[in-house]
Length: 302
Figure 1 (cartoon, rainbow, N blue to C red):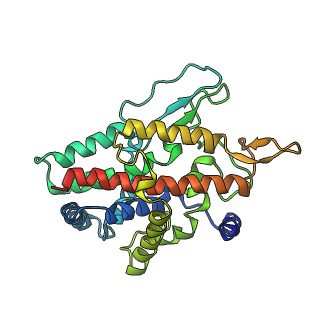
Figure 2: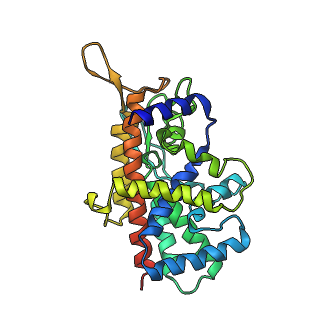
Figure 3: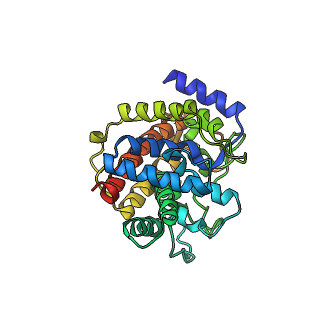
């Protein structure tokens, strides 16, 4: 654990922010891949090869996970609202603005429908497989489920994007959690944000596999009572609770009377906050991989 803290502090001071958590999406996909039935693994491999025809850098199932964010980076914004839902925290009781009807919960259901249906072409199935991998991972990132609405931010803080952090590699709360509270920073070199995408090397795939194996050993599927729950509405509420407890109300330390101090917008990060955040991140990465595997086994396992 001390090594983890040291690594985190080094990363805070030395690394540029790599947004959108590509390593997180890849490790979710790797955990899922390790838990697929043979028929399901064969089918996702087939669809990955179909997607690779149009996107040559998608050379392994795990690279389907970041692909929807690659579209955003290319200026394709039609799917923006598919990446999140806004379960509100409204401490000031402000009038809530209307929320998009088409959100991540809807999108996961749409992906399942397309993948079950025999009518769509293989390329469409391949695209929606990549969307599904990505959105299952996104919904287990707590800040993709929650916005806080206040008098100062009546339109919401956009999943923590409006929650500033001081003097940090991560300039807002959402970016911090997309990067796993520092847990994933050491893997950002695999797919550098904003750089041309290349097929993963065997070494890069191996690094993600090692990380996935570490998480599966630390958090076996049997350690999650609700691992078999495949309801995205349930996942969203689960993530919302984690966001409120550990992200927005994360403990940053103690005052001189031993009482908890909570991270506030504009604060500097502390090792205490990062430790607690990384534990949540590790659990959520493992859980999202197990649930994705179950979902894909239901879709393709027969």
